[in-house]
Amino acid sequence: MGDYLQLGHMELVPPAERESAVRSYLPHHPVFKQDGSGNIRVVFNASQLDENGVSFNYYLHTGPKLQEDIVIILIRWSFFQFVFTCDIVKMFRQFRVHPDDADWQRIFWRPDVESPVEVYRLTTVTYGTACAPFLACCSLRTTSITAKSRVAPIKVISLPKLELCGAVLLARLVVVLAWLQGHPSKWKTFIANRVSEISSSLPSAVWKHVRSADNPADLATRGETPKSLRESSLWWTGPRWLRKKETEWPNAMEEEFTTDIEAKKAEICLGFSTVHHPNFAEWCLKFSSVDKVIRILAYIHRWRANAKLDRAECRTTWLTAAELAWGKRTLLRIVQQEAFGSESESLNSKNTVSNASCLRRLLPFVDQDGIIRVGGRLQNSYLSEAEKHPVILPSKHHVTDLLIWKAHLTSLHGGPSLVQSQLSRQYWILRGRNFIRGVVRRCVKCARHRAATHTQQMAPLPAARTRPARPFSFTGVDYAGPFLIKSSPGRGQKSYKGYVAVFVCMVVKAVHLEVVSDYISTAFLAAFRRFVARRRLCKVLYSDNGTTFRGADTELRRLFDATSSLSQQVAAEVAKDGVEWTYIPPRAPNFGGLWEANVKGFISPSACYWRKEADIRGVDHRNSTNRGMLKLEAAESA
Image (cartoon, rainbow, N blue to C red; front, side, top):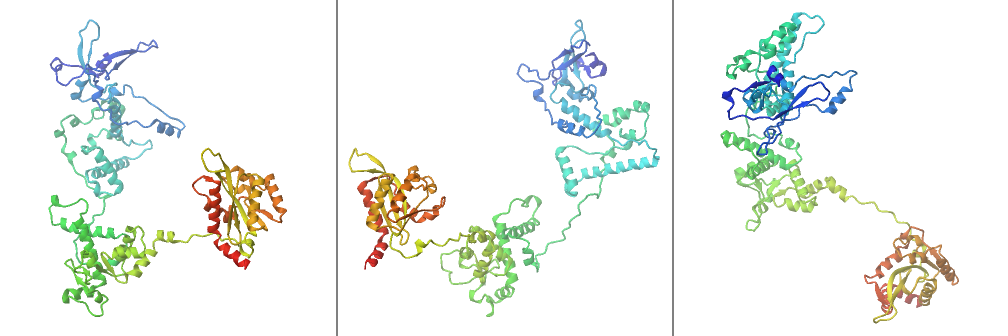
C-alpha cells in the first residue's frame, strides 16, 4: 500500500471531503506468495455484498469485450517463425480515473497498528471492479491510436521528403475529418457505411483537429532525442490546453473541413412535367407486374401533393387506398390515350365516335375520371358500375397483358374462360378471348401440368384371350380368402377356415365360384370336379406362382407353389383328364390381372359366412357375371 502512496495511485481524503454524498468503500486484503520472496499483492473485493445484499460491481457495467479472440491470436502466431510478447507492468494502475469518480473507490488503511485508520481513495483503475478490463483496454487502444505515427526510416532521406510524408499524412487526416463531419448520404457506399457506423456507435462524439505543434505523436517524426523526449511535457501530459475546460480550447479546433473525394454526384431535379412520354408502352415493358406500375404512379402523385404542403404535413408512410386508386385511373387513361387517341378526342368533343371506329358497337362514353367505358343496356340492373360499364382496353398492349397475367395468378392459374370471367367484371378487352388464351398458354406452370404423361405400351394379348373357343376351355384359377365358415346356422356352431376357388374363363371372362373347405389337394380336386361337372373339362388351367402372393396367406402360397408336392399332385391328377396346368411367371402378378379383378369383386367386408350363404353369394356373383356367357352358350347349343 506504501507503493500506492509513493506512485500517486492512492491519496489521502481531506477531512473536509470525507462526508461527501458520493462515496463508496472497498474491502481489501493481502495475498502472500508462498515462494518465500515475501511479496504481497493487494486484492480489492468490489463484489462484497453490503447489508442490503448488493455489491459495488452490481452498479457497474462491464462493457463490451475488446480483446482479440485467443484462437485468432494463435492462428496469427503460426504465420511467423519468431513471436515476441510483452507485458505492461501494473497495467490497470497506468490509467487514472476522473477525479469526480475517485470517491467511489475509497478504502480504510493505516501503515502500522499504532497509526490511526485513515480514509484513502484510489486514483487509478482498480483491478477487481467489473469495468476494469474494459477501461484499461479501451484506454490502451486509444493511446495506441493517438501515439501511432510514422517514424523516420533508417535509410537517409532528405528533410523535404520527410516533410512531404508528414504533409501527406496531414492531408489524409483532413479528408477523414471532412468525411466524419459530413452526412453519410453525401458519400459513396464504402465511405457512407463506415461514417454511418461511427456515428451510430459514437453519437455524441465531436471530431476536432489538433495542430501539429500540439500533437504528441508528431514528436516521433521530428527526431527527438531520449533526453529531450524524457523532459518533454507534451509527450507525457499532452498539450496544456487539454487540462483546461473545453470552452477554453483553441478556436482552430472548430474548423470545418470539406472535400469532394468519394462524394456522390449531385442529382438535380429541374422540374416536373405532366405531359405523358410518347414511349410509355416501352417504359411499361420494364415491369412484369401491373401493381408495381400502379404504385410508381401513386408515388408520383404523392410527390406532387407533398410539394404543395409543409414538411410537417407531408405524408411519408405507406400508400393509401385513395393513392393506389389514383394510380390505377391514371394508368388506364394513359393506355387508352395511346390506343384510342382519336376516339377519346371525338368523345370529348362530339360525345360519339366515327362509324369506322372499332368501338362503335360498344356505345362508348367517357366517365367523370376521363376513362372510356362500355355503354351497353344494363343501366337498370343490380350489377356494380364496373360490371355495367367495364373499361375498354386494347388487346395488343403490355398493360393489358399484365392485367390478364394478374387475373390468371389470382384465379390460381385458372383457364382462359375463368380468367375472362374475372376480367369482364372490370374490363372489356377487344378481341380478348384469343388474347387471354395466348397469355394463359405462355404460363410455364400451367404448361407443365397440361403435359401428357407417358404410358407404358401394353404387350399383345395372349392367344387364349383373343381366339374364339368354348367357354372355360382356357381358365384361370385363384383362391379368395380365407373366410370363417360354419357348417350350419345356430348358436354354438364352430367356425372353421375356408376358401373360395375362383375360376375365370380367359375367352369370355365368365366366372365360376366354388367353396373349398381346406387347402389340401383333395379339397381342391373336389372343387375342380364340381367345376368340371358344370363347365366341362378345360384345355389349359392358369394359376398364380407362389412367389406372387405378396401378403397372402401362407397356406395359399404353398398351395400354388410350383415346387410344392401338393401343387405337383394336383397338376398330375388333372393331367389325367387332359388338362394342362400352367403357372404365370414369378413376380409378375399383372399376368393374372383377369382373375385378380374378380377376386377383388367377390370379397366383402364381412369375414364370416354360412355355408349356404356362401354358396348363394357364389351363385349370385356367377349369375351377374355370366349373363353374356349364357347367351354365348345358348348360341352354341342352337
